Length: 166
Image (cartoon, rainbow, N blue to C red; front, side, top):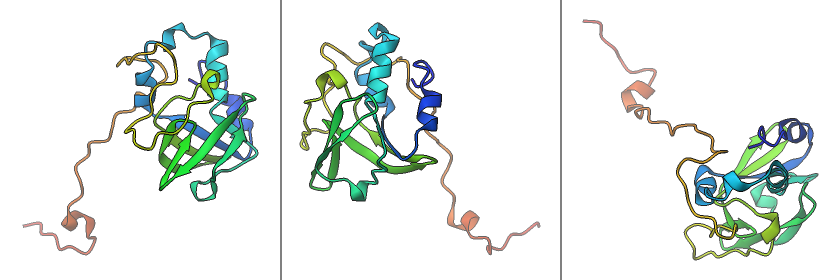
């Protein structure tokens, strides 16, 4: 998505950033809306996921609003042990990157629907793009397969385990 919107260099040159990155399922949930977006809309949506000047590690986040690179703010809500960005739940916090931190979220944030609020009882966030429906083949997903390598056995993991060549 950053490549399509020509934002890779922009994000790479920012310092002290917090980036809220939607997972593949989040993009799939709004799949029908994606082909109709202009580059300007994609740029607005993506920059709405980036906060510059704040490295927001999950332990430091509080109930607050943070201004985004797009120009409007996202609302951070801590409910129990869960962290939300607008209505999106943080599903993988604190992924360190060279210029800050990434939090993987379960929904794509929409700057045109910044009033979406957290629902801790929902298993995933409701899409905040009106009229969007899910699709399985969508742009902007990573395309990276889930690793399926077999788990190491305790013998293989133990470097002192005896081996025989007989």
